[in-house]
Image (cartoon, rainbow, N blue to C red; front, top):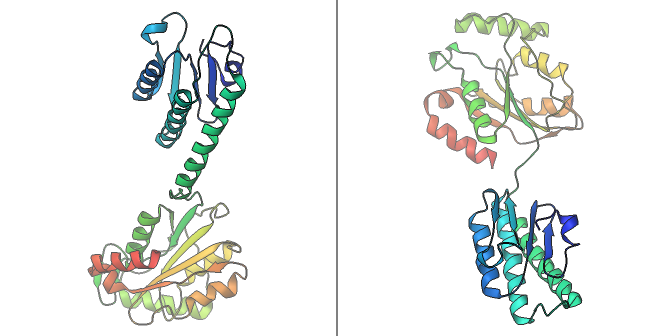
Length: 300
């Protein structure tokens, strides 16, 4: 006698269907005594993993139950409905007498039970954090090798921040890697960086990413000569970030953001540019716990 939600409502007087389509919960209850029904429903809930057929001992030939639940919150929700249903059966004196049943009272009670439980469920759901389905991306440029204040390093200062942010936000990551690598020596690298800035060069980088599906984009870079490296400008000019949320972060050794956050506001008129994070490269490189604490505070 197990039926789909649509078919169950056509059952005869001995088996009234209580069907909830969205939860994929389909079962029929034959009511003869509150005790047996309680036992049956408890057994159903105890066996709610997967799809289980349960046959109560008194009705081996007349009633069969199928129960399928996929989410624990849904399970709690319908468990509440069932308890209210049993309460109604007990206090409203529902009984099967020959071939008649108080259909009007039955369905009114079912509607009231469902409505009350739905309100409680909605209240609980409102207080439960929802997963954020918006897509987030971390884009960054970083350079290892010889750096000011920290010596020769294997992971760039900005890369450390970028990876922390991505891990804490669940964001995708794209690293801007110049096609032509910068020199490993600090002085030689700064000379090239200064010349690129004077020439307003736009160095090419390897690969690319489609940013159209991302709502929030973190953009990280070191401060070179009071500005972003020119290869970061190459990326920015290739992508339209208008309408998105942009969150800059940088590493430096005393110059702070150098106004680079305002560069995003000028370049992307309709983007929302949020408060930037500026951190000394030596802190990011050598004091990881302090760095992580600062990132956590900034992300709040």
